[in-house]
Amino acid sequence: MEELVKTVLKYPMPVYTMETSGENEETFRDMAEAFIRVNKFGIRIGNLELMLSFMAGTIGGALKSQIRNLYEGSYKQFELDLQPTLRFAFSNFGLKQTQISKVEQFKTNIQKVDRSGIAGGKDVFQKCARSIELGNEILRQELGLPNTRLLPSQTPLIPIYKYFYETNLKSLKGLGESEVTMMIGWFLLATLRGYYSSRTDSKLDNDLQVVGKGSSPWERLIENMSEQGFKSKIATKELRKGLEMNVLRSQGRAFLLLAYVLLVKNNAEDWNGTRLERGPFSRLARHHIFPRDFLDSNLDVDDPDQKENMINNLGNITFIHESINSEIGDSAPKDYLADYKDSLGAHFIPSDRSTWTLDTYLDFLDQRIELMAKAGQKHFPEIFG
Image 1 (cartoon, rainbow, N blue to C red):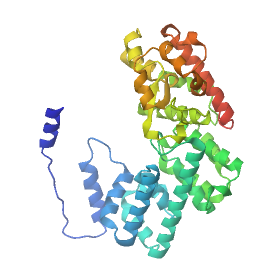
Image 2 (cartoon, rainbow, N blue to C red):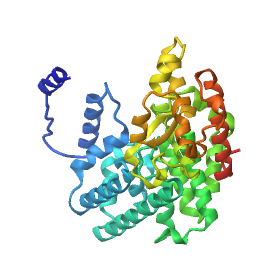
Image 3 (cartoon, helix red, strand yellow):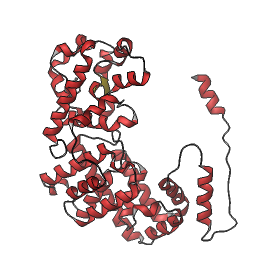
């Protein structure tokens, strides 16, 4: 590692400065083309990122300070990325999401925000900050989410923030129980379905328009999903798909989020005496009930990808305190689970000890998925069927 670090530190990083002799209406178009050409290979640079690059050199003064303060505050509070922060803020200045993807309009769009006026802009940003705070608070309260780390995408947060912005609520006390239920149900469904992973701008524009029209938009938002071909109910057979993938990788992240949320709703503890949502999230370990090394040594599977999925699937992962996870190490389940018998039920671990063996591993996974499905139907009957 030391040699590798030295090599990285000594790697020459060329820097090129491109200058123009003047500035006119074509300058930004030329800059955009140059930026896209330079970044054509390697990691793809999205249009929003491109717009943010232009923003850094285009705006200043009060507007720049307001954007920075909003982002820094939202990141500190919930680790919210710059992209959803700005998508949300821009929407409240009358900009559509689809406008962001048009390179030619970048400068015009930014100037439009700036022309809102310093005083008016300040009020909008203050309202944005309060709306983000309320949205984050309800996700902590209802789902036990302390930050965005478990979310596959942060985009579904934006309609929730927009709802609080449009309703102008000052606290969560103004929300009825049914409103909270529908809001959380929609958020989970949109997240688990990966609804905004394609055609993000147009879908988000449509949804934000719905949020701006009604006091309770969540049923209509679910209808929007259905009209796009997404099922509005999560069936048990869909949870079983979590047995066929590595939930610790990006493609399985939605299942990992679902596991955590169901554990929180099931009042699960960290096996160290603290409810999951009440302890520091940073101290929680993604625990393999059948330990990784134990399965890696004992599973007779030749295909490495299949073996990886069998080890890291939804049925074999739970959340416990990192110190307990370290103590367990690579112990066989039958040798350690009984020590935590009072906590197992809340973690959807079958009480039948005959399933705690390598020979019955598949039965164990199947039973655990059934228990998780029942918890989903109990706590979120609107979206689980």
